[in-house]
Image (tube, rainbow, N blue to C red):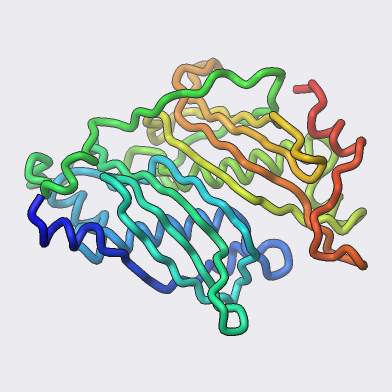
Length: 300
């Protein structure tokens, strides 16, 4: 790779972003889904600055720019009016480090550290005149015929699950279910799971003043799912962490006649609660025996 081109690729990209208003669901705090969305937007900016945004890649080369793996750590709160500075660095082909910071009384505070992987997927629906073979040299290692990741072993016990249909608004490029859809599915399946276990978000907010918080999350694509396919998403708690949070795992499978046929996505999340009232406001809530039982009970 020529030296000048390599220097351009490895140069860090910086941009300023704002969280979407619809992501401020508890007070004015931003949820993990929007953090992952901001990280995605920052990576897209990296590609656009180099003349290879998703629109150009699709129409010129017939490939879909796809986030296939996103892992984030969330060490601090993000508020709806915060202006976020994103720093994006190419660490190896298709792999990016992303850091989000905000200004707190003149000090730059890190609110997210993340790692994202990108693939350029050959789309089944090709635009006129696309030439996949002509991809720039530095992007060629990212080109794949389809999404393919390494599946995890099945979850022990009986996880909670719900079915859904891959609609057009879940997809990219008129065909494939996008990464952000599985991020949203992770948010939804946790909410549904907690309600099913009798400890819904509104109940704990009302009765205890507990606000849900996420410390880390990772969402990976394992295979392509396509528009109008049926998908089953499951969730189960794998571990209680020092009585302050719980590790959970999501899996999504394409189903035919109600039976899983293709493992298309997996995710992990570390979830807990912050106290919103009284002397302990702002601290992590300690999970009592009743809550731990609800989270870990072997019921489907």
